[in-house]
Image (cartoon, rainbow, N blue to C red; front, side):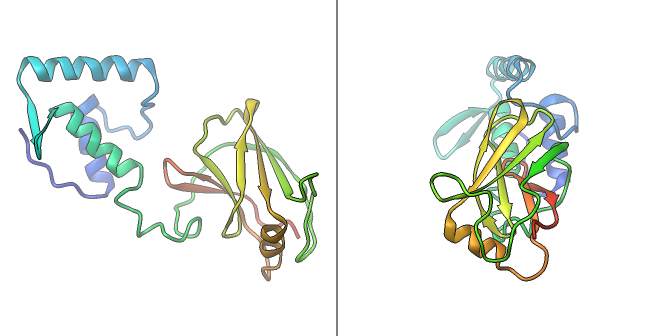
Length: 192
């Protein structure tokens, strides 16, 4: 079995991807049928050729170990300390095309777009974003984010959360955060 030094960097990710899939692309969809078929084939080959790794008594195929290492890096386990100030510390990248959003304005230290439960709400229309690995932050304050059909996201803040979010001096950055890829995208610079 090859020896690997697990480092949290792009070079390690590319090396793991190339070993598993003969590619260094970062956007392989692990939920696609092609991924599952390919990975099943790799496991069968590893078993036939007895490419097994032993981790404290756990017996895994070489491919399972490589995928585990890739997941360990990709899902941010190694980067927990680096990204302790989310969303500030996250790198920016386009996550989705933002088609529309609202409300467009709010007042300092006040609720906005008040809902029947007293919460303030923001909605964001994207071009087809789906899944449950997204959050919306009002500055540094995490909202309760829901991804609906057709790429619609809603974000709720409690009355105290909305007051705290809008009392910050200057512009309020509203960010869409991909929690799986550990990236952010600014939706709007300010609601004030």
